[in-house]
Length: 120
Image (tube, rainbow, N blue to C red; front, side):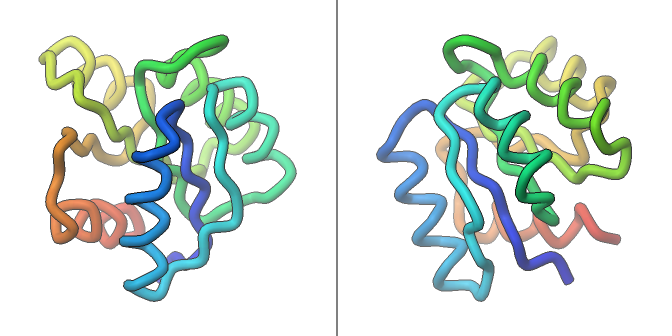
């Protein structure tokens, strides 16, 4: 079961919520990034089991970061987490290699379901 998670979101409040949910449910948050460039670098350094990745971020957006992460490890498990529920955002992310797409606001159960699904 995956245990080590990298949280990527430009909103500190959202990172705090995600960290709390994950910690209460037995996951280890091994790092937090606030933009896509930092996410790609931290993924390479930390090698988490799962990446929770926001779509809309400064410097490098989530879709670009997803592609960079998968270029460094095609087996990476990345779950997109965003308030952008547009069909285009979902389709683009899944076609690029995301394992799931969680729309904010989300329930704790939906987030945990996505994490469990990532390793089936």
